[in-house]
Image (cartoon, rainbow, N blue to C red; front, top):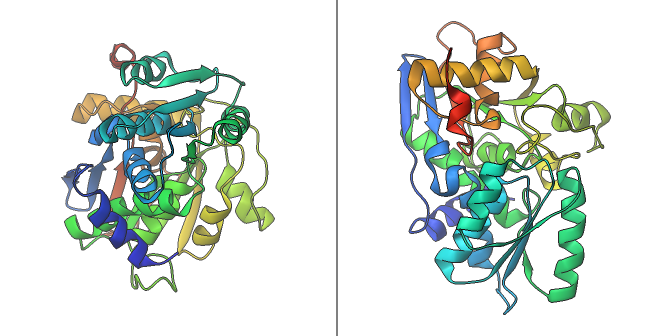
Amino acid sequence: MKFQDALDAAERISGYVLRTPTLRVTPTLTFKLELLQHSGSFKARGAFNRILTGDVPEPGVIAASGGNHGLAVAYAARRLGVRAEIFVPTVTSPVKVAGLRALGAEITQTGAIYSQAAEAAAKRAAETGALQVHAYDQPEVIAGQATTGVEVMEQAPDTDTILVAVGGGGFAAGVSLGSGAVPGTAGGGGPKIVAVEPELIPTLNAALKAGEPVQVPVSGVAADALGASKLGALAFDLLSRTALTSVLVTDEAIEDARRTLWRDHRIAAEHSGATAYAALLSGAYVPAPGERVVVVICGSNTDPATLVIN
């Protein structure tokens, strides 16, 4: 994949997605508020880019998701006037299932984790001929997510480092590509990427140690959004060439970051959305003095009642 793929995607989807704002928290810390994107997460970018570059047949589009990708595909399908069928695992939050219903998608809940729902979706797609929109391992999807990286560097061109959460790796790979952090893609001179994962779902961390994507167990508070059991092959190719730091955070650190975002900034993030920030608050990643950091807050599909601070 090339940096130009990100620029082409930005032009293609510009009339369909939001240019999400940044919030300068301190002179050296900025939040990229991707949780304000249509459907509540960055996923709308990849969904629109994939559907707009594909030939959508009469059966429409089909996707497997922990929730956020499904919401994005359902939103994009409704906006573009095509049918959407979404497969989600049983761990998917009721908030996300309700959102899928509200968007008019046909929903199937199956399997305990994302990979099992993905197997069922692939089988169904083979039967119907629907266009598959993968959650993270398609070039068009990654190029769509890369538009976040393009925006970050336009909005905060002095950025030294971007912290981004990792599940299947498509978003981190996209942000790396779009920010110019992947050598050899003609982006050139981009920031350092800090890829942040829950300790209980270390897909990238394990892949980097093994030299290839490997299966990992899936559990913990962010499993409904960062619940891929194996890093995507395309993501591994891009991320393994990136100036990258891989860090792991505990569920407790994610919970604390989520509470802090709400208490101090009134940002209502889901657990995956708070994961990157958890690396800063917990000390899993410690910036150098003066290092200018952007933290991507990537998802908001959560139950607001759980944000109450006692």
